[in-house]
Structure formats: C-alpha cells, structure tokens
Image (cartoon, rainbow, N blue to C red):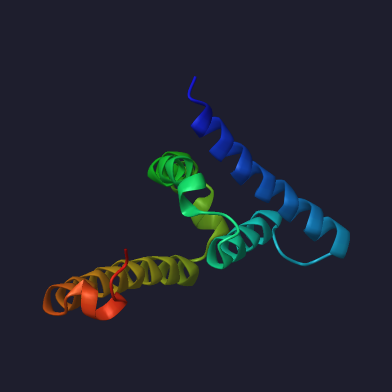
Length: 129
C-alpha cells in the first residue's frame, strides 16, 4: 500500500475532525465540513501545509465527486412525489439557475483561455521558480 496516499488522507481527515470540534465547541452555525475546508484553505494560503501534501488524494476525490452526487439527485427526480413536493415555480428556478451556472462557467473559462493566450503567464505572475 502506498503510504503517501494514506498520509494525505489522514491530513484531510484531521481537518474535517478539527472542523467538527470547532463547530461543536463554539456553537458556530456552519457545517463542520465547511469549517474544516476553511481551516485547510487558511493553512494552505499561509504555507503551514504545502499543496503537495494533499494534492493526490484531493484530486482523486474531486475526480470521483460526481459519482457520489448523481445517484441521489437522479433518484429524487425519478421519484413520483417529487413534483408534489416541489412546486412548479421552484422547479423553474432550479432549471434556470442550473442553465445560468453552466453558461457562467463556460463564459468564464472561455474568457480565461483568451486572456491566457494573449498575455504571457510570466508577465502576470512573474518568474514562478
């Protein structure tokens, strides 16, 4: 077994547990996983934790995230009672917001790619090495 993966997994799990502890001790109205993510972001930005320490496991988790989310959502939409629970205006809002999110992401990526081609990276960020 590759112990690098195990170490990276334990680092992420430690932040999740730290988030649970902080939310429970201070009674913060925030999901504990979000609190753990904020703590992880702060330690990454400040340099306490290096990205390389969690990069492989994080990439693996993001790659397989849709496998965890798609089945419950499809099951919800297939359910007979879904339209009875969710009224038509809410369904329209969900569809419009989904399309808006997709279009917003597409235009943002297209703008970024055009900007990246027109301005050399070295001019924006300097010499990274």
